[in-house]
Length: 117
Image (cartoon, rainbow, N blue to C red):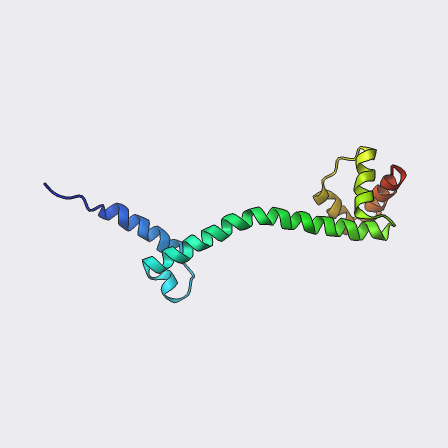
């Protein structure tokens, strides 16, 4: 009885790792074992950073809103509280975008938030 070596499947799996390591320096893109180690590590980082990216952007938006709100004489927390009381349902990304691109609209929002505190 002949034995099954799994040649085709094994070769395909190894080629997948080496192909994913394209552009890496030296043995990292040539040798299977080395490329598997660095590619799996890269996949772990990309998985982790897809989640931390969301946190980082929220922190950036909050910092931008806080800076713009302080120019209007409000703190971030009072600004957000006033908007919630006024019934404004803009998310932080949109508010931060207004703070950068359209200062006039942001100052109207700040005025509205200040009236509703």
